[in-house]
Length: 369
Ligand SMILES: NC(=O)c1ccc[n+]([C@@H]2O[C@H](COP(=O)([O-])OP(=O)(O)OC[C@H]3O[C@@H](n4cnc5c(N)ncnc54)[C@H](O)[C@@H]3O)[C@@H](O)[C@H]2O)c1
Ligand SMILES: [Zn+2]
Image (cartoon, rainbow, N blue to C red; front, top):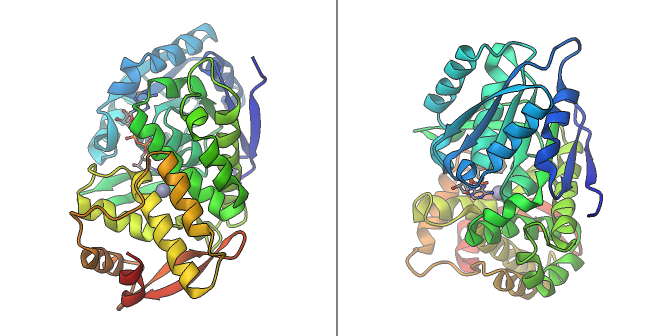
């Protein structure tokens, strides 16, 4: 067994760490003890999870670790997936926190994918004006993205992530063995976001990810090699670098994490939420952004074929589904609240590394789609 990797997430007001390794669910009790506010006793705490994650046994493992460390956990099991991210569900959590008598010194532990992390983090941020929480991501997407940076959210009928907060967790614990129970399509989808990180920070990694794809996809579970840990650590570092360089989200650095997302969000909405997984839409969005960059001479021409090859190795799509009309995507990308008139601001890969923000007119996007 190799030692867990530690990545500093040194964001104000609460610098913390991501721990990446195998068999870490059993250490959550100790993480919770270290997260206690000064003077607080190890008392009642909440474990928030969803149906699938509970059925896989991960929430029970976390609760057992908390009990062994002297805590008294109540487990709240939410509906799986995006359905958990509602004000109703957040209200249900607060009601159960009240019944369990969680107070200012109590800890919330979120065990699940990005949906559970987002709603549990949100509930923790508002309960008694904010109690400490620990994120235990159990999807590749939540490890690579949703558990890093402290953003929490719920959805309204009017739109996704409209209500939320920034509430830094006290610790993020990534146990790679939890990925063994994740449906393969969800695992592949998480790799879409990781390809994005490679485009932003380390182009050489695109080919490496492609050639290592089979090993990577096979390496969740207790017996996996180090490629999965390497890959998760890489993505966490890239996200952390962008968040750290732009903590207040004023300099456009954090916005570069939206590479591929203008097209992806339009595709997800047009296909109907849940039809296309987020990382699948991001894979297509990355290829589209790379194509625009190549045509403008902004980035190296090899980026587009390299991305296509890597996405294919992961079983991710690289072309618009034939059922989707490109003009609808152009239009949806335009009516986004951040986009005005007949163009939109997109993130485009720059030469060799990094990306830039640039206005892309309708015709140019349509041609790339
Ligand atoms: N806060 C942020 O910065 C941030 C960043 C990116 C995404 N997000 C949010 O994350 C959400 C998507 O996250 P996601 O892709 O993890 O989706 P998800 O949480 O819906 O999980 C996907 C599916 O996998 C199941 N699952 C999770 N872990 C499992 C496991 N180990 N074994 C078996 N099944 C498991 C879930 O029950 C669900 O059905 C979106 O709501 C998105 O808005 C937030
Ligand atoms: Zn994303």
